[in-house]
Image (cartoon, rainbow, N blue to C red; front, top):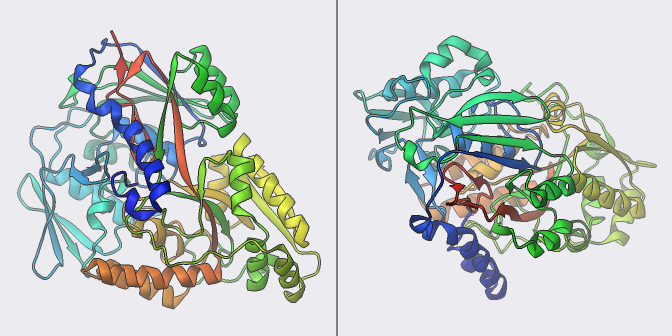
Length: 530
């Protein structure tokens, strides 16, 4: 999610506004050296984006889980405030061979996992092998171009590729780059999420399902003086207003996402500040077209629901939704309406792609042309006030054109399981976004994508995305992504609705909290001020 490049991605007026958000989001970092922190204390973070799923980077897929991982699981690479990729556990950026089929990454020395064991090339090799081969690994499609990873001495690894793979470094700047303790992998195996151990300023302590996750300061971290809290508690809130009230009452000191309806009262509270960031992600609806037997149970087969069986009905479904009104009514004007998997805040944003416009009259005609009488859609919605409000808006819009929508509110972790199993019609779900477009597209729509809950399979899209991965020039990659996205928008396995402009609330007693364009709240190096 790209701060300095936003102005080039959107119009001058919008770009200036987004740039202002970026400045406000990163202002704390520039003055961090002047802040005097107190040692110790507990930070409680209200999480309103759903409960994290498994705390195993191999399997994890939730936005909220990524926020927890930022405190306990460092990566080979990270993003800075301007979405530049920078080394974290790696000692430098990768070196690519002349034939582009091997990538060498040097590793930092003297680092320990949070069980006291050493971080080295063997740990990276074992982690990557797990990501590539573990049953149900969500990382597998992100690393599908990798045949194997080998050690080159104690502090370097080599990624061996089937073909040139341009997104590799970007993938290693997210969960695919998190390195797990070999000792803990051997001890817990498939149950790693019960007690995850990585390299990080904090280490996992416990989890209360549906309520909270607690991490404590690590005695093993290589820069432990930068971690100030004794403990961080991530508290789960399904009700955004209740979370905002807790922030104002001081029960929590940070709120990772503020609902538009709560922004005015938080803004008016002199004890609080708001941090904003224009993000790389999207919100939308995933439609189950071919996920009849479960994720990656190939070949995918049409599930036969009303939406799955009729492309015309899917087109009508999209035409019935007024994205601009959705933004105003549900989000209070705090998102960017859009129709593609790539946000305007990304340098990869394709301005030439045109959205399907709001047209209820044509939608009514398409419903009739579909030949389906009284079409019905069961819309699965993660539990939460904003998600429910959005679902009810969509329900009302679809009723106007003759499509009945049944809203099925489901707790977040269960909804992800049902999506993977294919036991749903349509799913109101977003994605936090990645700096490389491959991370926003391939996993969701490629036949072998490990997030392809739609069960979408199109040979031409697979080819376009494969070519985009192996292309060596930005121009060529743009060409293939343009072609792929046009086909996706025509087939509608997903209907993209908007892109986030995230707002987080922070107590002024706390300094050092940042939010980058990935819209994740970074609290690992924050602390109470003296």
